[in-house]
Image 1 (spheres, protein in one colour):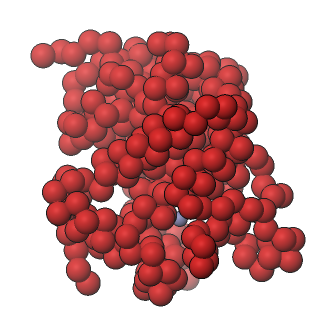
Image 2 (cartoon, rainbow, N blue to C red):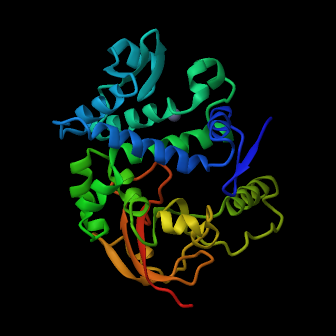
Length: 328
Ligand SMILES: [Zn+2]
């Protein structure tokens, strides 16, 4: 399979490769998508009377790309089992969305589908898409890029900064998400990606590492098989808050190797993220488990919607961090 490396990442999705080739192989596809989304927002602003309602506004934005937005019929909702689907028609694209979903989800999903049309290969329709199976590494690369672009479309950076009013923090998420018609989660991540300085947001889950999980499963199987024998004790593994997702501001992304938190990396047990069982937003001054020495203000709170894999006592947590001091 063909792969291309750019911006420190390797891509193998045929749609992403088609986009990289279109830019002469020089532009990081993440920046390309963000810039295309921003250009579309600028274009939409030349229209007077752009509606305030996030869904109506998005319909106008889509129309500039020749994309029609329509709700699915209910029998199709059952058939598709998806929040939205993108189809080529003779007169351009059509995005069909599931009207039974939460409006915040509909808005983001439509944004996501609009971004799919930015990839030159998409014009060839479903033939290319069927080359990557859902859940594969390739389809994940593409889905993450579409999320990135969707967030630019539904929460335009300048408007988000204006609304955040230079007080970036978890306390404004309710207000910002109702203004932009976006989910709590998407809005938390936007706090970082729209931040003008050094900022990071993400989700943490209280768990063992996968290796620890495998070892524990193996040990309990051995116990079942040889109940009379002394079996190996599991190593003193502890559940900790571990990185599930992470989103960086543009300034952090420029020094990604230093600022990113790798998947499953744990937060120190002294971190305020462990205090989120108490209600509300916890805050403190901490460095993060990454390669930077940076000290920042960190906020954390229990996610309003807990995942199926969340720990009962130490639930899933959102965190937001912004740098206040650099040591060197
Ligand atoms: Zn998608």
